[in-house]
Length: 221
Image (cartoon, rainbow, N blue to C red; front, side, top):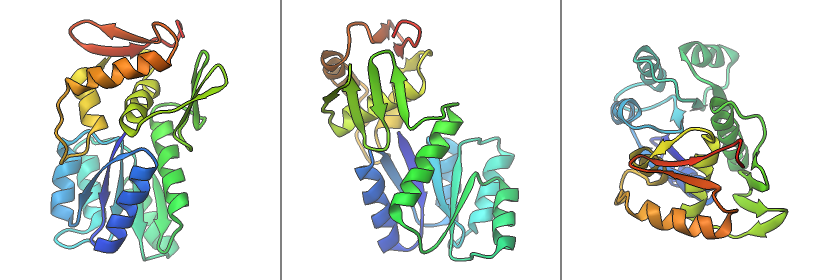
């Protein structure tokens, strides 16, 4: 899953990127409101972490612009302003959740996972399809109750497919959610990751839709 972190404090931005990458996310960074608004408008992020106090354009103005454009991806606001009035302004501008600085990194990661689950219509942190269970808190896969190791890219591919079980995920859509902005998005490498996953999963768990991409068929699983 790919997320955007918008934070102008360089040290905090790097800490957020490191924590989210460690939690299995592909992470893009922006350090000002103008760049953030552009990226959020054109890139298909699973979710966005947005600081309010940004140079060049305020975070609430960026959020309001996204919502006017119809961008419906979940947004978690960060701010040093902890007053209830500021929280109301953030929610009214279209935020899905709100976290005041300073915060625990584990709480931010947990809240972000929850926002992504809810946006996909999922309630549990453990995604289940038949004998396959993917724990998004621990980035852990089990098949028939047995732990199966995953690489970072394998986890992101499987997590995105399982978040969207039952529908065909096109090749380029998957590439956009597996790789960060500065990565080489060679969609052909996805075949390698899918092939590796198939060796670790039950037969026909991941279905190839010729000419389009892949699907996890919830009913079949």
